[in-house]
Image 1 (cartoon, one colour):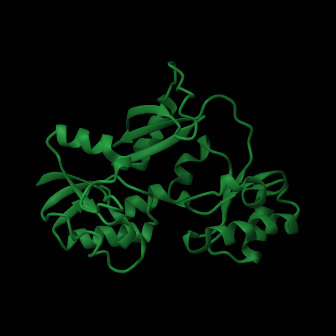
Image 2 (tube, helix red, strand yellow; image 1 turned 180 degrees about the vertical axis):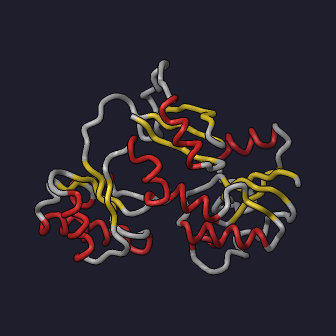
Image 3 (cartoon, rainbow, N blue to C red; image 1 turned 120 degrees about the vertical axis):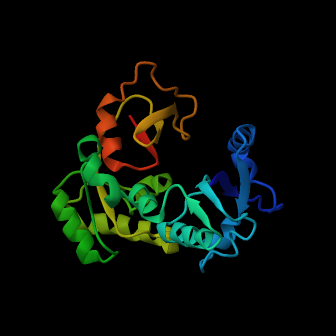
Length: 247
C-alpha cells in the first residue's frame, strides 16, 4: 500500500495545503510521498467526517499532520478514511492514548509531576481530586489541554487545600474550554523548573528529532541532552508517533 501525508487545507483555498504545514508538505513531496488535504473545519463541526475527507484519494497508508483534534474527532476521521480504504498509521485508540493524559500518565509517572483527575466536571469530583493531591499549588487542565495563557484565573491554583478558591479557578477553566472541554479536570502538582523547555519527536520508541519548544523558539536544546531514561518509557507506550516536552 502506498504512503500519503494528510494536512489541513487552506481556509481560503481549500484545495491547497495550509501554509502552516508547508515545510512538511515540501519534505513529503521531495521524498515521493503524495499529499492530500482534509477540511479541518468540516471535521471539527461534528458528524461522520466524510465531507472532511472528500478530497483524499482512496487506498493508502496515511499519516495525519495537522491541527490538534479531540479524540472523538480523530476517531471520526479514521472511520471516514477507512470507508475510502485509507488506513491511518496512528489508529484512533493510539491517538487517544497519546493525546489524553490518563492514557499515558501511568507509564510516565516517574518523569512527570504528580497528577490526579476526574471523570466529568462536577464540583464534588473536583473537590475529591483536590483532597487526593493534599495541599500546595497545582496546575489545572483537562485531559488534553490547559489554559496557561489565562494563568491566574484558569490554570494556577495556589493551594488545593482551599476548596472554594480552587473551584473558582476550575469554574473559569470550564467556562473558557466550553465545548472543547475533554474528559475531566486534571490537577498536576506545581513544580518549579529551570532550563529551556525542549520538544522531542519519537517514532516507534526511538527519538528522531529534538527541537526548541514552539513557545520558546530561541531557547535551543542543550547539546548534551540525555534521553536514555526516557527510552524504556517510549518503548512501553509502543506508539508509532509521539512528542514529549522536556525540561
